[in-house]
Amino acid sequence: MRRSARRRRTVSAYREGDRTVVLIPARMSEAEEQRWVGVMLDKLAAQESKRVLGDSELSERAQRLSEQFFEGRARPSSVRWVTNQNTRWGSCTPSEGSIRLSHRLQGMPEYVVDYVLLHELAHLLVPGHGPRFWRLLDAYPRTERARGYLEGVVAADRLPHLPAAREE
Ligand SMILES: [Zn+2]
Image (cartoon, rainbow, N blue to C red; front, side):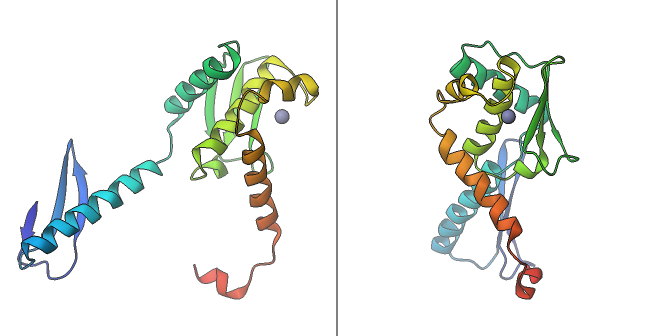
């Protein structure tokens, strides 16, 4: 906790190594201080949970999902984010074992990213979208929900943009 005489109203917080620094105005009361520390810790935790996975974390996640749902049979050689993929959420090259996810998935709920990862992992085992493919994905309990979420995103993209929305 750092009190600052220069700080009049604003409270801010950040991580410094494994410590959390909360900056508060010097004149704040003990009770207010307690309340703000709680608020700021919640805020930091929320920001961190939305943090984007790096490529190496993405690979670890793919491995865990493969183990959990496909008995570890899908073994990608690389899993990474790409920014040049705007019409597909994910793609894979089975001959190379490489998987690419669109950066547009970043910030979407975890279960949605997991679904797209599993979808591409399944293609390493079964090409195309036949019954065998979907049977594999049936193992993942949130397949339908994730597909619905992504369909909703696509539909929302097609809505006309209202002038007011541009200001956001
Ligand atoms: Zn597919």
